[in-house]
Length: 596
Image (cartoon, rainbow, N blue to C red; front, side, top):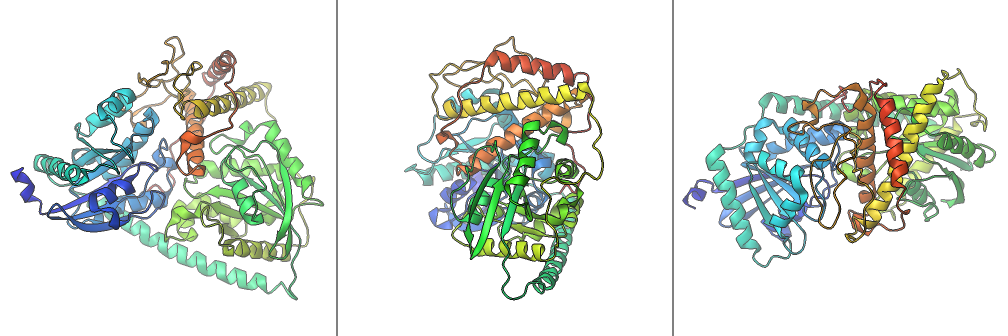
């Protein structure tokens, strides 16, 4: 095309969810030597090269988790996503949206993609976006894939002007394929011009970054001063026995962190913990006992924490004989922490009494996603809710990497922080913690509602275990139970089909109609959908956490339970629906706290 000569230089931004293989597409375009890293870091990456006779600059933006609404993406990620366009000389010509064709493209993925791109880059982003499908190995039969994924993918493609391309790692004609991609980008630029960022939004993001950097530096200085003061309390090589109670959300990395501390695979990581378990060992010359506990939900209020979980947490205190002197409160770094998460955490911790905070160290898991940012950058970015929690814990916090577990420095530093905390305390948490105030009594109706929702949570959890075990591995010959897709409690899944599987029965109840364009912020959602929305967010988070634990290879999951009883599940759904219709709640996705 003659028009291609008008772009002697080409600037592109690689965008997409975690697991989309943006790094692979970038390496194919620039050549394997450019070495983009995987899609987990909060940092942008810039690489340059000469391709097809022109200078090419590619910037890989930070990723979001598939199915996560914008409010669940950490503030640090959102700020870096916005500012990554400034790394392109004179701005980007194209946003290259990468989609992994090895994964089903669900409606929740489409909504997350639309919300992230449109909010962070503006409505005009669609005039400058081209979809690149990537399979990693052999190129897929792309027409079949587009047809099989149905409305969610096809709707997103229309939003991008039906511009798409296919790249794969083992294609012998990759140079030809890259040249074809450049021709499509040239045509897009000829028709729509180059992307222009919103100067006011970019300046706001720059100001936010500088503010966070200053706060992070102040936090580091305070932490160092506090450490020096507490180390002065430890004399003569004193090393107390550490009796550690681990608490936190479901899938917050509690079991993996416990294994990291003990330097042994003592706890079952990567699956939901159902019972409190105690293990002991010697770590750096210290006697260490750890009790791992079942987690509570991230999005559901404490009233929906099941009696079984509460009972196990209470029992866990007695397992730290004679009582725990350290409590590690775990939070993953790859998700946001809003006012609602603070409220839910405080309410769940009331089970152990008001004095519990004197023994708590906040531990952040999955430090790998920070890149060169510090943990203080994350805390400062999340703003008031997380800073309030850190202050409540005496400004004690630490972070653990999920990779490079052979580096024991992170564990040694954590043990020292535990010793410093214990040295400053003259008492331990009682096995029967005091109650500073009586919790408000629940009505019989409230208890029944919580019981039904807990029942639904357990049933859907088992159903998804079954689905992941059989469907995600590609066993299409199996008969499915009546489908209740991830998020079907909040919406009716658009009419999409999956090869080899039955569609959802038309008689199933539609719980919410999706919006015309699918953006979550375009719909005036009635109050009755609040808890249904939380269900969808819990399942999306569960799915991404399992993928993270398995290194992205979610189709190799084994060992799940058998198919739950479909009739029982549907009866439970109807009971929850009846309650939702008479319930009101302020719980939802929206958060006004420190959005980028």
